Image 1: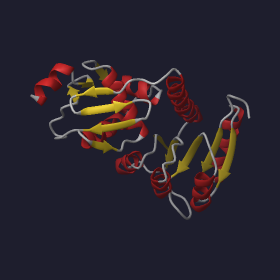
Image 2 (image 1 turned 90 degrees about the vertical axis):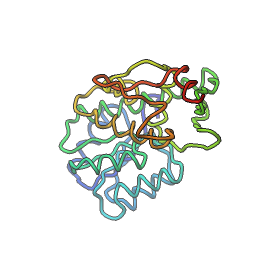
Image 3 (image 1 turned 45 degrees about the horizontal axis):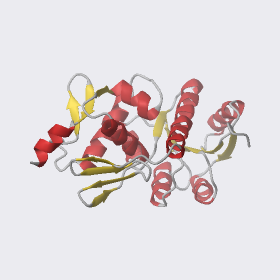
Length: 244
């Protein structure tokens, strides 16, 4: 396997879609393994190493939600791109809450799928490069402590369990206190792509992040809403005032 070639597990029961995705991902230089049911997909994901898992929600046997839940419970760090024919917002939100890194809804364009895949790979490379450059000192803001190298977060003395995208959002904010980010900027910085119509992905992650780190999520102390723009992280003096 070359440095650019990635190993991808594709769990999809629609043969036409699976063949189409495999064709284009192979053309991009990746090694794709197709699995047509959830039980076999979960088994492979748990016992073999992949660079990406593309996971349909509606599957024979174990469904995509349960696969995603199980993998994250087992601390599997592999990026997960969920694919669904459903359009209900609750399905997208549930997938993200269970630890999926991104999702895409059928029908989709191959160009968009490939862009999402490239973005996920790029985020992994950026994280690896940051680790190789040396340990970054923990960021302490108010009662919040972020350890970038260990990817650990504590509030007070309590360890907070964040998904990879929640952590990346928080780290981006904490490194840039006071700076207002639009939803499109957050999509590009954290997810690595620019597509209109996906601002709800950002909103969902912000809400989840607030529920985990904020003492009172309805009155956020750390991640502030900038009306008409997006979100920003509180400046040190604001946090000092709130701690006083």
